[in-house]
Amino acid sequence: MQKFERNHPYVIKLDEVLKQYFVVKVGDACGAKHGEDYEEMKQVILDAFFLDYTKRSVTENDRITGD
Image 1: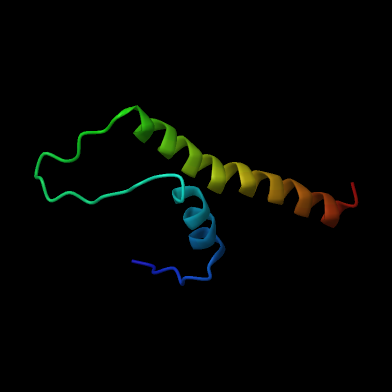
Image 2 (image 1 turned 120 degrees about the vertical axis):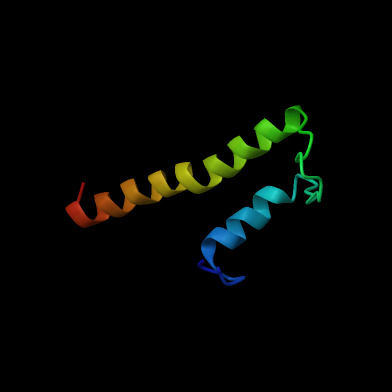
């Protein structure tokens, strides 16, 4: 398993996103009970990683091709 360093861009982005949420690990074998904020949190995290990545990729490709 890969361990990301604290200064890795993914870790920094995740820290920014999770500032809005209170996250707790549960020891219950049945898992945690999730409220409506859970789905929102997942979407915010995915957007932070993948939408930002898509924007960077387009910008980087434009620079390379000169568009």
